Length: 552
Ligand SMILES: [Zn+2]
Image (cartoon, rainbow, N blue to C red):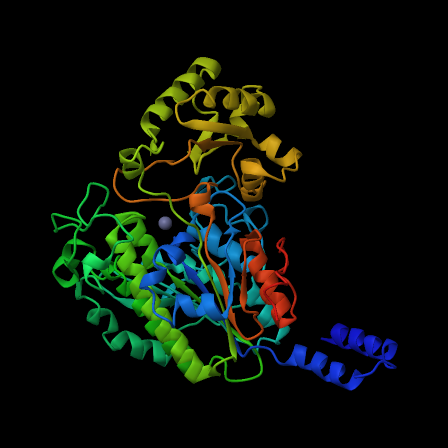
């Protein structure tokens, strides 16, 4: 703030003879004191850009359409790295950079130092709060850089609050950042509660205890049928087809779904996560958080991060083209409208700023694409593994020089290489030469290539932005387009192709222009844009640029 003030007084002196000084001075000083009271970051898990346009005619006026109409729509917004997964996605949105710098290289990855698999948000040094489960011990300790939420906390002397909310732990913990007041996520199974971590608190605040006791989760164990008459859902495929998973205990993946009847065979309250009601309960909880934590009620900007994850579970289960996905977005649109109306009355119309994006997109179900003659398919990892092991035995007399293969990366055993007197770069190159001959492997690169070049375009630049020298593997492969390691029903994501990278980016509310652009924007631009809006520091590793055409 001091620096800003100095610059201002300098400008004032230089231009003091100009007409209208007083006006420009007062509007300039407003600019840095009249911040939004609340910034809400919304991430819709697995939301492709075309869901905005495909389902447009089904949306009401107060949700997605309100943001598109009154806010700014970046229509050509992409992820600029691989892999396009949830953990890296949330980290990149809030840190303004890519896995190369923030270090969240996947959801789970092989830790070369600890020589074990790690999960992006798991932390053995903390305990869950609100659950006894050993599987819910979470913190942001693997995130290497600061988030926009951290920078706002630092800027406001910790007066501005940061709270993260999601169904998924990583969707709450990573956006909320290192300095958060709290992150809350949903524990399903036989609990059905929002929980947190000793990283933030010793016990749940009373309003969270009350929310959990209110049986809101129980109320969503109801029948999921289409919101409108299913015959009007002309933007998606037939309800009954061979491309969808469905729930255990129900023969067909077709409406309606009686969640209460199906819950025992589908992990109890987890079935709420796998329905659009998982988004509804997140909206309910976000509203309770704004009310009870008095977010947006004073001059220090608060940041609330809300991640809607049920869209991802439903996409994985039913696929991009399903009636279930269409219905899920119609219902999410209703939840957004309800949330925005609440913010209008609680914080005030025009007093808050919202951005909405996604953590990745998704490919159409490959078996569906095949049925309409689009090149697509499934990866046969068993055959690939056998072929690779045979190569290792034949060439090096042992498979032990490979420590781990995961996330399309090969991790070499450096001790074994030394023992066998093998040169790392020679082995990397030999692996590339071998792997590129395999079915459905389209490209292969060495870590030496990644760290000794500066790629600016194409898949190579996406791989490089996703490559973290300390954490990533020694050889990286890229699979054929629209080929996934998956069952024949449902969809997934992870590639650098447009179906995974092209996602919505909408800004709306205080300080935001009305408009749209087809100019390319990338995910790491979001956090610097919010920094510029608030006049605060960029997250410390940010590599994106503020989108000045978005700001008023
Ligand atoms: Zn997913």
